[in-house]
Image (tube, rainbow, N blue to C red; front, side, top):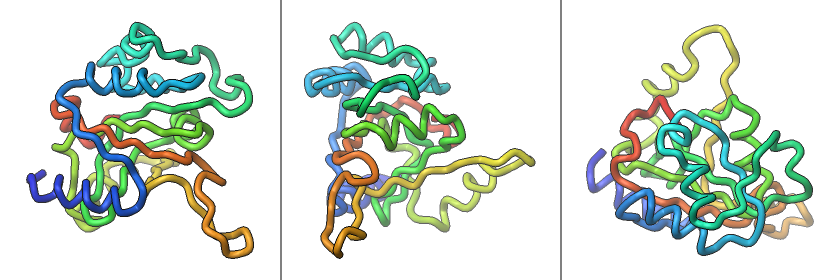
Length: 186
């Protein structure tokens, strides 16, 4: 990752409607999330979430973190918090391996999606993503990979652009150096 990729990613993500905030630490990101809380928050137990104790950090900060199966979370949870595998600078896209159903639910059900990004994982474009994508799809088991570019939007309804119809109305990309430079974990 170069600083040029980070700057380009920030510009591209903002252009498609994402809120991009650079954070000095994971604790600052947790504070940012907890200060905006308005309801139940889904935090999938991924490798990085467990490694950083994300659920505990959010609970300690006052967030209402759902425990249990996400399908039982009720109506529409307020937020989902995930880590990304990598990002694409040219389009402002966040990419995360989402084979685990809880990751898919945390990124599509809530009104708001917070995604934690290490700037070291920002790639230039899709061509630079070929190697990590091939590695993610290694083996015989099916793998789901989500490409998230801005908040959910559609123009299916009488050709009127609607935000949040098929997913989160808001996407907050929280850039935190040092959370993980490994594009194979999220």
